[in-house]
Image (cartoon, rainbow, N blue to C red; front, side):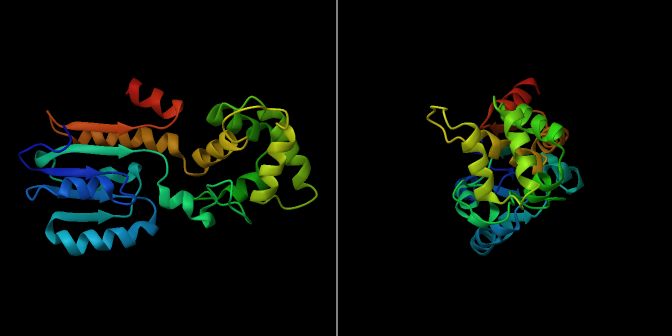
Length: 231
């Protein structure tokens, strides 16, 4: 479905390590227009630019800016979204997406207005609770928000402090997933405005794709899943 026998142009909206783009470009009559908000993908971008020259184009923008791109939609066969973060982003501990990260809170995935550090430092207890509850479906959102506010009165809360706070509240929880998973997810979603970006990305994609074209979306959590299925 994504890569038909007869070639055309494909829009890879989550370039990352370039997996989708590489596979589609194996067919010589295919072209790729790729975007990604993370400038750190340029190493992978340069490799494909050298190898495929006039068949691969890249732009460092967000989903919400798709409408600004000049794309001839007549040749557009599919628009692809593989949501969430890439393996290279989770391994880059400076981005603070991993529980193994240390130091100042970050979680920025590129082209951001603020970091997780600013959220934890300035957000009210009430709003922290809302972030954890609605973006992370965290059962202990209220207690964790309260503990964060109490701790930041005494010191600057870094990544290690945040995981300790979460573990102190959820110390009796027996689960297969890490205690910090839902809190980290919710903060990442908020810092990167992932919900509004996804909605705008889908609207932009719908306005670009011609009749018979495909919008393919891979989701990783229930919030994304509900939005995409509703759309």
